[in-house]
Length: 304
Image: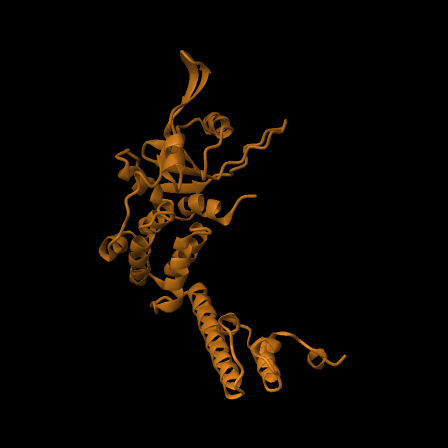
């Protein structure tokens, strides 16, 4: 099953075609300025079917003619991928009769190095086809760590954040990106905020990003950011209410001169279920020992 994180790493190019030129420029690879850009059907299945579906395929038209770019998101080494990539390049070249470039995006250095190695098909001494993907990964995508730099190119700053999402320096990229979102129109900012959250996957960086969106006030405040803020506020209210109930319960036990063990105190103070804390407080009014409050008796049963 394809993960949202995998999808985000190539869809960022589909949604922001100008990122292709910027990415190639980072690697000092010439790329013609397009006058027209179109999304191409990614389905390359033929009549006799082995299904072949690329992640993102874009057609660029410039003064030099047409050029197809296939973008693939790769999370780990995969021995079957080179054959699929060779097929994509050959199929699209045959179909459109124009140059085809394969761009692979990775979030870890080991996968990027593997993807970057030439993939040979044919005799070892004389391969018929050598596949040389252009690969973007943490080892060649710069970390954008200043608000000024992030504000110059917010889309590239987002891509930097996604590429370095597993790095210990992720917070230093996400904070400038969050601030830079205030420098663009609110609709684009909201969209980029959501793309960033999805593309970071299940990482500590994603938790940092969600905290930034939930705890700070930004001019755009997308629906997504407002939802995170509301979640955080609701959680804060619930935690505050639970802490209050725990204090009341401990006060009742103290006034009744019941000894509270460290284990019982830890169980009470770590509980976040206010209804359960209220039930324990009710039992504390008649209990002969603090531990009795944790045992539900017949009096706790709900009427049928």
